[in-house]
Length: 238
Image 1 (cartoon, rainbow, N blue to C red):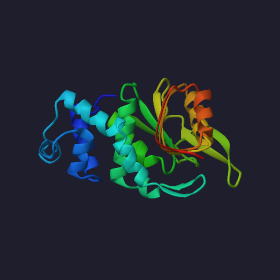
Image 2: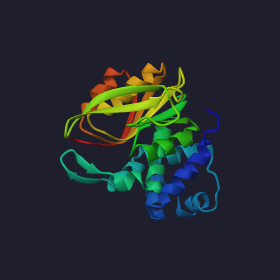
Image 3: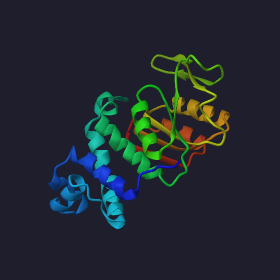
Image 4: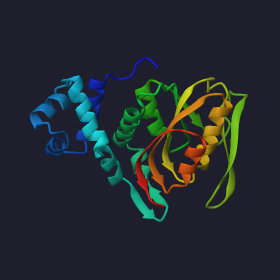
């Protein structure tokens, strides 16, 4: 799309957000930059050079700093059960997830970000904003005002029942390149249904991003769909 963030501005935004969770001495340890220099970027609004911006992003994102902040806000309740409510509805944490999604998929020509209601919506909004992309939300009911829908039905489990998701046909444009964003991947059944809807619309699912994934069952869905680019912030064993 048209108005993606400049890398220098983007790196400063990431620093500002990360500073809400870390002290200057922590940022110094991760980036190698002194507190006075970091203060100029975070508080004084100074933009780093292109080279330093790339260094900051590598240090914080590829270095796993954002991931570790996210991980600390996941509550593991039991086998295959996690509570991420406080994560996906915390605007500062959602920003971090959006930054990581943008960083790893910024080289793709993304037209739209797609998710399934409900808990994937906040991070999908944050990601779509950074890409200046359209937002597509598959819902479990039909909305008033639309007549034609793409529809997929899949078998949910625990307990087992049939679930349908719907996307108005007017929302997905032909040949759209779509990044799928989710809060949690587990069985991959919802993901598979969303991929089918995107392909029914003759659009292209070009990547998958999730804050958390449990186990590897969902991996088979991605492989079968021939989606090459996938990024998960926190992958937990099932």
